[in-house]
Length: 230
Image 1 (cartoon, rainbow, N blue to C red):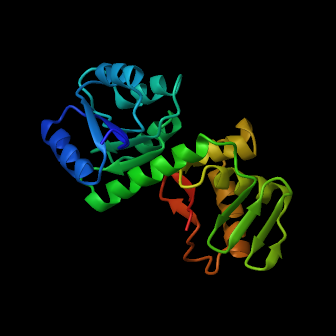
Image 2 (tube, helix red, strand yellow):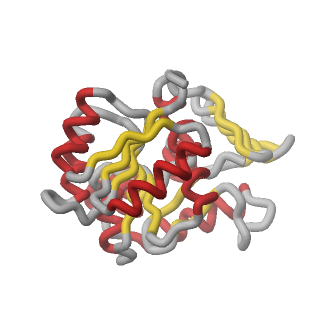
């Protein structure tokens, strides 16, 4: 039992605590619970969990502040689970360090899948970056700056490759528009969302079997993009 991944739930709603204990316990996770942001920060520091599930509406401090404080010292994956469905709230939480965002009410299967993805991403971050990343029929050689789709090499511009590499290095993690623009183009482009959309269309046209129904270069509506491992 001791080798089960530990999930720290920071949520003050008793029924949500019980539901998550049951669902995650049935899927072989060990669950620790904190009812306030400060308690959650203390538990995370005292006994670091493998994944954190965080509500934004806490009784003492806002969940986005909890994200920010956690990110000072840990890269533990944070999944926000909140009744707030405003796009600005989602973007703010992700910009403050959350890895993923689910809106209440949520599907049990989806939550468990998101926890699995978070653990996989955490394991990848614990190793040196893989020089070659593969998803579906797409292969990205980060060291050689070579991309292929199936057996065919794909010619990308330097900017297209930089964008693809950033998404792929953060595979299965939701990246906000602003985070991508800052990383790939620089701070002065942080609000140029349409500019990013143009490049994503170009990448999909070159890499996806069906650019209109992408399987790998996914849109997170109103938030950003995600490179999916399939």
